[in-house]
Length: 308
Image 1 (cartoon, rainbow, N blue to C red):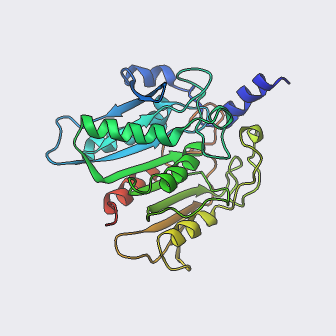
Image 2 (image 1 turned 90 degrees about the vertical axis):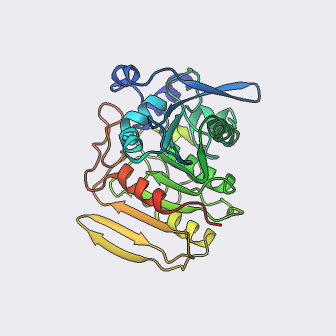
């Protein structure tokens, strides 16, 4: 198989693709907005409460998975209804790819696909996006948060590391670390969600599974549990977490300094999907209903503004 068809298959295999329900999603999405990053225009969707609540508003960035786009991230996660109800701004950025608005990925360092191969400066993009949205709307600088799925979850980790001066908390879903990350200059709270039956980003670590091995540079994934341990070290938390198990959901909670938190969930029967959300494509793993990821993430974000 030639490299181009292989890459196409890899992106489809990430299970986060845009195709399913895209026409329906576009009908409710409106036009993308853009921000200039160097010589490049990057796109995003933004959802702002109407009417605007008084006072500065939280900002949540939701990063789609590899092979997806902003529309897919909105549809899959269901964050927009929560933002309308709770009165915060939610932004769905587009990754980059050969096509302007589909089959997009993020440069999370060792993954994934087009963005990694072409050295996309996604950290600069997200910093510029936050700056533009903060100029256009009353964003609370202490309540800026990032979440994402799979490749977007990996990118959430990277943004927590490299934008620790800006981001209050991150929430990677079915993502992981690669083991060579340096601790961030400033603490960032973290909520981590993985599926025990995930074959794409296996909780035990190792290689990307399914049809997506070619999406990374070959560096093995670290086990899911190392994400919690990493952020516990970064935030000065105690090394041994408290553990609860309820209905097939394992929940680890670290004891952290005041104003910081690190928590991790493993949903035992969950595959590579956004728990409580919508499937990203046909034949994708069905989302587990054992945990409502978006509601859980928002409750965590809401409770953890940027530590002084």
